[in-house]
Length: 157
Image (tube, rainbow, N blue to C red; front, side, top):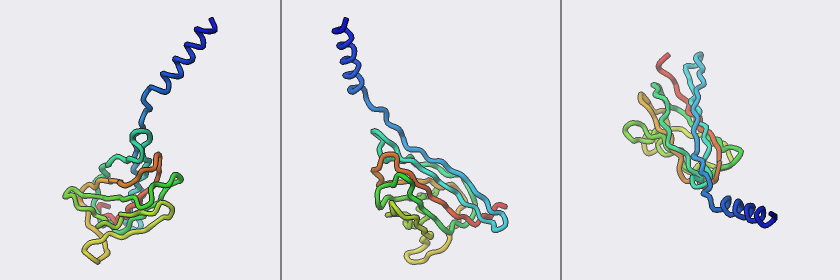
């Protein structure tokens, strides 16, 4: 009887170590905050990187369509910091990054502000009348978290 129990426990332990580990795909959550008195909205993109075989990955996510001037970005690494110098891009329907590359090489420890880069050296606002896609790259930290806030001078009030 004891031998059968020991064998069953050993078999269970062996199977537990041999079964594949479930990978969790990263997630992205999007929310709006509106400030009608200033005709400004903030689109907040909160993300959690994947774990297991999906370590560090964050799925590309289509953001809600809007019309307005994008004039500021704020990135805030979360409690589980991402890899230093991770990158965010926001391509529009023409595959142009509306940040102009200013969301590349983000800090893993400090909240940072960026402005859209319109030309090679001009900061300003970028007119959007379509959807953007949130993409995050160069993170290898499992379950890393963070937020991106996109500030928009709205036109559809």
